[in-house]
Length: 148
Image 1 (cartoon, rainbow, N blue to C red):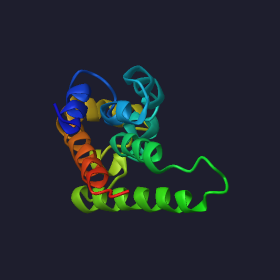
Image 2 (image 1 turned 90 degrees about the vertical axis):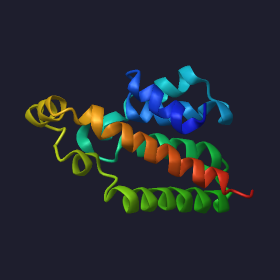
Image 3 (image 1 turned 180 degrees about the horizontal axis):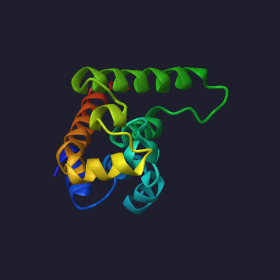
């Protein structure tokens, strides 16, 4: 099973969007599935506030594993990580019109009424799997196109 299908399956099995995307790719970067689920647990639903889509956040965590700066003297990796994050977010926005959860859902998850509206309208079952699929797909394209 490829990482895109794995991410969608994780989401459909009940994991948060952020967990699903991060866990689908994590083991290839030295993070166990369990660790990925734990790390990604609080980023779903736009960090529980409808901010940056959790599927995007999961993808950004993967990009951080690949390109993230860990040596303070390595400013090239800082720039590369930034560039890859912007590339990802720009492509996601191009395909889905936004990377902000509340814009995608049309609901403000900061209030209970809109959270209930999103649930009752099935938005987490209809829109979110497609966001997970899109984020994992873009991530696959970026990582596959990396010649480093």
